[in-house]
Image (tube, rainbow, N blue to C red; front, side, top):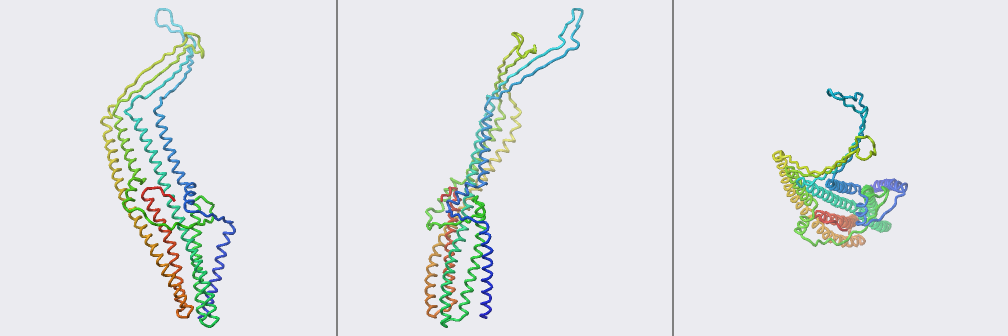
Length: 449
């Protein structure tokens, strides 16, 4: 039995060495760089390099350009044209009666030029509504950018904390391996003194192998998370990101109602719903404006040169100038826009109902995030107590084992419980951080790190 266990451990160690070499070689080949980032630095870098955020900002620029186009519609329109005509008259003698015939020239030339300026004076305030609608669209685009910033921020925080949890677990596992190595040396001395059997030495070696296998799994998962985080931050894919310690203060200063009140004032979705309702109201006003008459002013200037010379002599051309007002009214819109207004009004009612639905969803989200955060805080307190208990138990069992009162299995179990509690505490700290940032995001406030 002992020979079998010994052979198994040798095979596992050989496998571990080979697998470790396979994992290390790609790192060496790619000459990976190591970059230590705090959580605020990671978020700042990710926002600066986010392609999603850059795309959202282009939509704001598009909305601004559309708004400027609406402003251009308030400017007068102007146009100019020039016409040159040449006519050949083969039959240039015209006999209309018994009198002398009318003789026309064999050919004729003419130059005509026009200049026109038009200005819309009144069109039922449609231009005003168009300006206000364009401003609302621009505000909505800005809110989309703000929401994207929040979504990207929380995604980076989530990925960073996942990497932190893996690093923290790896650190605790390293401490565990050191403790097992110390325990192995002590058990080996006991074996040489005939106090314990060879089987107990092999048990510790097997425990070390199992812990090393766990470390390999963590390395594999870390490579995946690290790669994804590099993509999010815009870093070279081979960069090894090192995380830093998280703050230890997880106390909440607010109750649930304060978070709910904050959300009602700050959530982007509610602001967008209000702007959408206002946008529909402007659409209704614009439709009703179609029922009103329009008034415009125009200025026209003409250059008529029948002589055909580009620079004619005096009295060979005329330049009439006209100035006028145009009043028009498509009164058919009095009965053709009624259903358009009704449709827009229904859409407005739907937008208001949609806002109420969003408000209810936000309340549910905040309550869920709040309860998750409170539970995470309580979990940290319990795990701190568990670590104290596990540490005391580990010392007691260690003393018993050294005095041959407690078996090796109890010693290994106590060691495992202690280090598992330490890992759980680090994971709980990261989960509490994420729960807090999720709660903060759900209130609509900017996440400050």
